[in-house]
Length: 51
Image 1 (cartoon, rainbow, N blue to C red):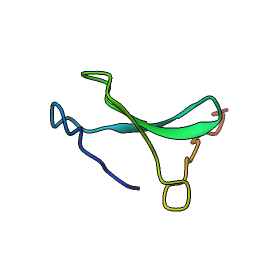
Image 2: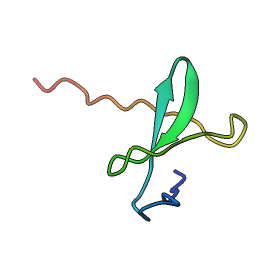
Image 3: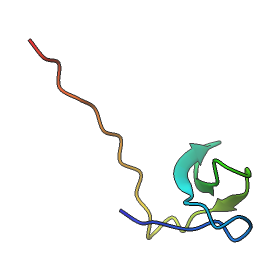
């Protein structure tokens, strides 16, 4: 998993989807940057149902 730091506030950015595109977003200051489509993959994790 890739980690990227915000150039404004130096917080860890989160990879999200916006309008069908992968975007790096800073949860602290709101800075957004378009992600490299070839290098970054979004992985959706789900927890198995416990019985």
